[in-house]
Image: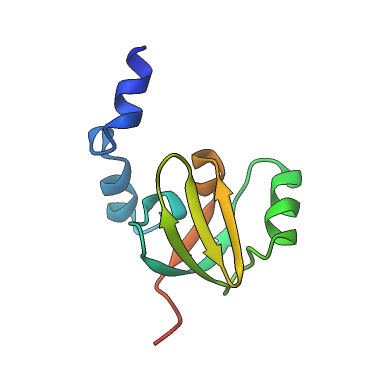
Length: 99
């Protein structure tokens, strides 16, 4: 019960602020409608890496966060994906390459 409280109050715990302060950002740190480019993938399991790559989540691919709740929905190229927050934290992003 108490573990859910911090999950629903995203401002607590410094999740976004800590990621921005360190310079590395992930999909989970993006705001809705924010555009970015995939810089790299850092999943713990090789099968997750293979799944992401098969779905088109590759370094250099344009990415847009469409919604944050109830799950993170991203558009990568022409593909729309719903991601678990754990997986979203393994996708490193940077500034959008589109001008």
